[in-house]
Amino acid sequence: YYRKIIKKHSLLILDHNMEIDYNDSFVIADIVCTYNSAFGMDSILKGLPVITININDHLLGQARDLSEYGGLPVVTSAFSLAQIITRYFSDSTYRHTLQKKVQNYSASYCKAFSEDAAHNIIEQIGLKSD
Image (cartoon, rainbow, N blue to C red):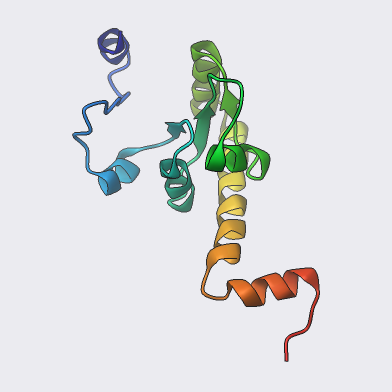
C-alpha cells in the first residue's frame, strides 16, 4: 500500500523501517503525523506542526494535549489527513496559523517544565514569592 503512495508523492517519507535517525527526522520534516507519541511533543519543541491521527475516536496522553491545549489538527481518516496536509502546503495563512500554535504551545510547555517551573507557576497563579 505505502509503495504506491511513495511512488506518487516522491517527497513523502514513511520511515516504517526506522532507517532515519531520530534527530535527523526533525531536520528533514516539514510537518509530522503521529498518534499518541512523545515524538509529537518532541516535534513541537523543534518547531514542527503536528497532525494527530486518531483512528479509535479517543485521544490518549500527549496526543490529547496537542489537540486540546495546542489547538493542533486531529484527523480520523486518510481523506482528512490528505486535506490537512494539502491545506498546509497550499494555504500560507493556514500554515502560519499552525506555526503560531506550535510556537505558543511550545512556549507554554517549556514554561511549565523548565528549570524555573515552580517560579513560573507561582507567577501564573498570582502568588508572590519571598
